[in-house]
Image (cartoon, rainbow over all chains, first blue to last red; front, top):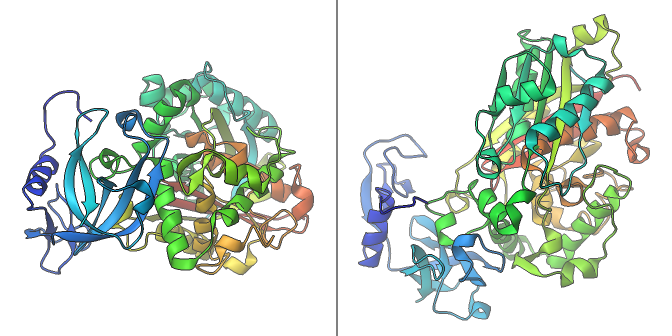
Length: 129
Length: 389
């Protein structure tokens, strides 16, 4: 992570869009979906990628509750991390707004950009739909 | 094409030595490797050296020449970084260099200094093997990533934490006689199940320790071994490497390791063997679930059945195919950059009859070493065969 206010082009714009409920993936003509920053489809090498808006809700495919975090999440632990499918892509995010015991595979979630309690940095999050 | 022989190896003790620099650790490993191999330092054509987090733990880049100097050799040297598969990748290139006749003698090795970072610092450093933007910034740690795979495995194929506990117990048992191992102590199932959670379902005893250590192996061409009358009965007869998408969530499967399967298939074909020929294996058990995924990817167990292999004693020392007779990363320790070469060293000793656990594989002729990077976005597999027994 950078020390100053310099952003990561592509990634920070995606977080901005997600905060406005307009999270997207990049799709190639073959229908392969991926996440930015991206110039080339990682599946087929196509270079004409189009932004496609993601569905409002996704489904948790796997999850864990982390008790031993990196220093950037020291104050956040324990917290749940999940992989959730949103249409053509999966995302990794922190589950917020739910008791840790209620997080499970199959849970329907929405994107919620939250902040780390430790660093104040934006964190890709999921909240129960 | 020249056959590649393992002439001799050296390992430091793996464990907690925060004050020791990686150059000192690696030098110790090479002194043993040169003594054991009988190869003079002046004959080394190249050093291929694996290291993952030297910038973070020692403020040191450009390890190649530093480590050649530490080993007392005057030869071109290159560092390999492929996360936890760094020195496995170095071994693979060493094999190519010898096979194609470019080199006769290659020193391959690796080292890692980790414990000086502390648990939080080492957790942060290990996390850089994942996608920083899309995984680490969401709070995913490395144990967390393997926990995601473990949960996905349980959901898809069944199994429970107790099955994984048998993997940990087995590997601790195997390390009891390994004087280089970080943990030479037996553990019980209850110890694993009752240990503090790291990332659920994985706990402290599902995780390999944070380790300092180094490994070095002298690889030579068959012609060099014959000319110099070396005692080098073990050859590296197959090499393979596989790759996958960086982030776990971008993979087709959350509970399988296709990169390791690809590496295994390539290595088996290269060696002219199939999975049924494998007598013994050292696999990358950074977490208990990782051993399960590895033995399935290597086709030593069918998909969905590797979970019961340790519990049902198919992979114990007395089992059909002993896995991690060294103690594995779990009990031997995991100084990241040293791990791939240490697996080759342990396996060569097991096959040559020079290992404390060789008694369990006295008829073995074929072994496999599996080294994985990240959440298996990188994998290397090597086949070792012993000729004179």
